Amino acid sequence: MFSLTFTYVLLVWLYSSAFVPNVKAAGTDIALPFVRNPPTNASQILDPRLASFSIEFSYLTTFGGNKTHPNLLTKELMQRLVERTGVGPDVRPGGITIDSSVYDPNVSALTLSESPSGGIYRTTFGPQLYESLLVFPNSSQFVVTVNLGNDTITIAKNEIAAAVEHIGMDRIRAFELGNEADHYAGGSRPSGWSSSDYTAQFLGWSSVLSRNLSLPPHIFQAGGFADDPTPSASMTTVDIINEGVDTTGVVKLFAQHTYQYSTCDPVRNAIATLPNLINHDNITAYLDLWKPQIAAAKGVGKEFVVGEFSSVSCSGKQNVTDTFGQALWLADTILYGAALNISRMYLHQGATLVFQSSNQANSPGFSWYDLWYPIPTDRYGSARASPSFVAYLLITEAIGPSNQSRLALLPSISQTLSNLAAYAVWDPAARSIKEGPARLVLLNLAVRNSSSSTDAGQVTVDLRQWTKNVGSVRVKRMTSAGLDSKDSRLTTWAGQSFENGTATGSEIIERLESSGSVTVKGSEGVLVFF
Ligand SMILES: *[C@@H]1O[C@H](CO)[C@@H](O)[C@H](O)[C@H]1NC(C)=O
Ligand SMILES: *[C@@H]1O[C@H](CO)[C@@H](O)[C@H](O)[C@H]1NC(C)=O
Ligand SMILES: *[C@@H]1O[C@H](CO)[C@@H](O)[C@H](O)[C@H]1NC(C)=O
Ligand SMILES: *[C@@H]1O[C@H](CO)[C@@H](O)[C@H](O)[C@H]1NC(C)=O
Ligand SMILES: *[C@@H]1O[C@H](CO)[C@@H](O)[C@H](O)[C@H]1NC(C)=O
Ligand SMILES: *[C@@H]1O[C@H](CO)[C@@H](O)[C@H](O)[C@H]1NC(C)=O
Ligand SMILES: *[C@@H]1O[C@H](CO)[C@@H](O)[C@H](O)[C@H]1NC(C)=O
Ligand SMILES: *[C@@H]1O[C@H](CO)[C@@H](O)[C@H](O)[C@H]1NC(C)=O
Ligand SMILES: *[C@@H]1O[C@H](CO)[C@@H](O)[C@H](O)[C@H]1NC(C)=O
Ligand SMILES: *[C@@H]1O[C@H](CO)[C@@H](O)[C@H](O)[C@H]1NC(C)=O
Ligand SMILES: *[C@@H]1O[C@H](CO)[C@@H](O)[C@H](O)[C@H]1NC(C)=O
Ligand SMILES: *[C@@H]1O[C@H](CO)[C@@H](O)[C@H](O)[C@H]1NC(C)=O
Image 1 (spheres, helix red, strand yellow):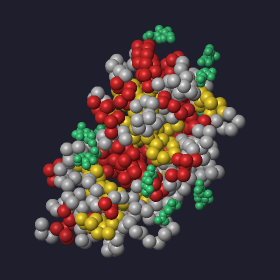
Image 2 (image 1 turned 45 degrees about the vertical axis):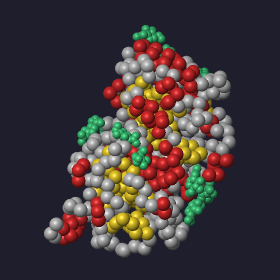
Image 3 (image 1 turned 180 degrees about the horizontal axis):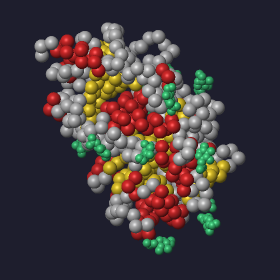
Image 4 (image 1 turned 30 degrees about the horizontal axis):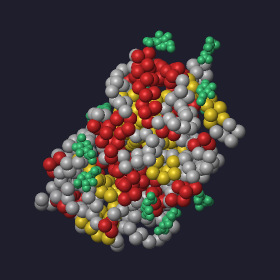
């Protein structure tokens, strides 16, 4: 390896559009043991649309705009993802408002019927609604959720027929009957409404709709339940498979929703704090609850997706989910979801809905967890990307465009560094599998607040074992003023911020320190390319 150092510095210099000085840092020094081969339980091949979106149905026009007035922020942000994976993310217009929606060919785009307190009790939509989907990349696929809550099959039939007409089957990933049917009991259904009732109605409706509308086989996304699959859950993927939901050839895949924390009531609101959220053990322990559900779907040869999710239900929490902390939470949650073989995760975008809970902390307005605010508002100020948007850039670059990547969470390095998560990505299009991972994600979830001058969590990771025989190593960094920072202009991916949807600033591609290490501050992530 003669003159490796020289070549390497030169190459990195050529790669870089800016030079970053390497300051030998204080903090913990560790050597990350090299993992050459994918472990036997490494993920399936990653879908480049792993990081996808769910958009609250009643706000679809707000996020998408229409043909003459497309929402340019949404359009630009989606392009940033296509640039990295080659395909647009999936989009699922859905959420609680779908269960009071009605298609009417005579209305224009969207009409909301609201209560005096701002509760949306009906969403009537017409053909122009589909213009909102034009801002999404042409390679994006749509999950079409229809009204099951109303218990009137004609409403669902009209909605599916309209979607087939205006979106086209070639762009439809799947049809979904209703949103979170495990929450219908005592509301749109009798209090005894159970899993077997859902399964029976799913089988009946999917059969009639498939026949009546000549739908292709294996086109429905089943499930879509809200509650965590603990023993007290009333409906799960395991339950409905046992009840025979997959016996008629209509199911394409299974979905459940995940919201780790909540502001729907004061008890849960109290624990929805940044230190609790941004915690690798909490994140992995929570998603591990879905392992039997994923296994059940895989057992019948189907994908499992998280059809709607965010960190804090009932629209997030101010000063928690609108911070850079949400970016770290998203990166660890989505990459760990991929490690568990969840095919795609649909991050929910929307607004606080009065009928979500009678006891919630939030009042109407965009959700505090939205990845972007599509239009200016009094409460949030200008339309812009949130500080969490950069997580989607890290994730999409970790996956890449090859359709061949697989990943694994590496074993934790030590008890004291339990908040340092390392994901290795194998991608034969970038590096032969037998030589080792093509990319490595290091997420340091230790708290570094913008207000505090000290960073107890900084880690310097020795990667010399990883870089043998590697010509040039590049590093991209996801960082911000601090975990609690709410300023998108100070939140960067590879040195650039994306508050208006396009990159601002010069791209910074770093190289390893001369010791062969990379330093990751608390509340930072890096993506290393070998
Ligand atoms: C994920 O799927 C792959 C491919 O089917 C399999 O080999 C692996 O064991 C699975 N991993 C987990 C954690 O289930
Ligand atoms: C498109 O959106 C703009 C801005 O919201 C609105 O003024 C216009 O009426 C809409 N066009 C149609 C055809 O609805
Ligand atoms: C974002 O800002 C850049 C630079 O000022 C500008 O060129 C671009 O048009 C803006 N994009 C949007 C969507 O506003
Ligand atoms: C739409 O308008 C036509 C003509 O006015 C009417 O015949 C039809 O019943 C209307 N459809 C709905 C769903 O209201
Ligand atoms: C989709 O394709 C059409 C036709 O080529 C093009 O006009 C449009 O800009 C594309 N949409 C997006 C979001 O790229
Ligand atoms: C069902 O939809 C009809 C027509 O929009 C509406 O009148 C009725 O109130 C709805 N029922 C429920 C339970 O939402
Ligand atoms: C679908 O249902 C409508 C009435 O609801 C009926 O007129 C039509 O014949 C049905 N089509 C098929 C293919 O079953
Ligand atoms: C999450 O992590 C914190 C430590 O930051 C811990 O105190 C808490 O009990 C964990 N669990 C939950 C559900 O927040
Ligand atoms: C969030 O922080 C702002 C400014 O620091 C403060 O005014 C507001 O009350 C905080 N909100 C909550 C819910 O803690
Ligand atoms: C993969 O297997 C290892 C070793 O048994 C285990 O520690 C790890 O949790 C497994 N990974 C997943 C994602 O299940
Ligand atoms: C990856 O798969 C998508 C379809 O899912 C396809 O459009 C794209 O061209 C593929 N990319 C490569 C590099 O094969
Ligand atoms: C960092 O800020 C968060 C939210 O403001 C707070 O909960 C936490 O205690 C702070 N941690 C430290 C170490 O300052």
